[in-house]
Amino acid sequence: MSVLTDIADAVVAELNAETWSMEFEAEVKYLPVEPHEDLASLQVSVLPRGEDLTLDTRRDTIHEYRVPVLIQKRVDWAEGKADPVEMAALLGLCEELSDHFIKLQLDDPSAACMAIEQDPAFIPENLEAHEFAAVLMMTWRLWR
Image 1 (cartoon, rainbow, N blue to C red):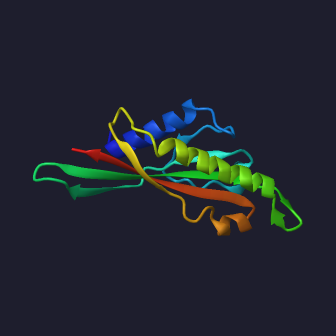
Image 2 (image 1 turned 180 degrees about the horizontal axis):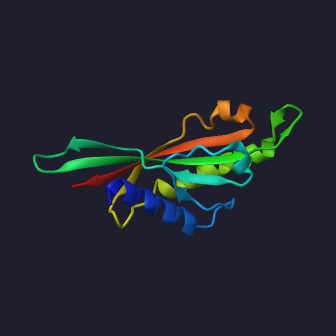
Image 3 (image 1 turned 60 degrees about the horizontal axis):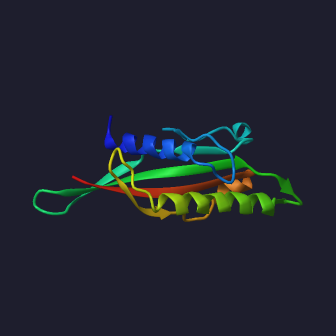
């Protein structure tokens, strides 16, 4: 196993162990694209994406692992626009997940969540297809 996939697995375990404002079962995925018909229920995918190395001292390196969390759900439309109540709930879930993980230190592997970026708040192109999609780009740091 790699540290990157270990972190992704640990993020999935944490997501599935907690109680959130909306129900879902998170899973690691390598190809997160789902056909739109499959998004009737909330989908949360954790994607092992990449690693950056920085020399910290002569002997130690800082490893930063990028692990995006993708939140997807088909949204209801009325009068040519997405349901604002549903959109607010989904954006609220994104905030809830960010607030939880930014304070988290994993035990195995011993990595700390150092940053979470959600920009844009949701992907407008997906919303045009009646799908809410947001990416929480998590950066996990490990010293070796």
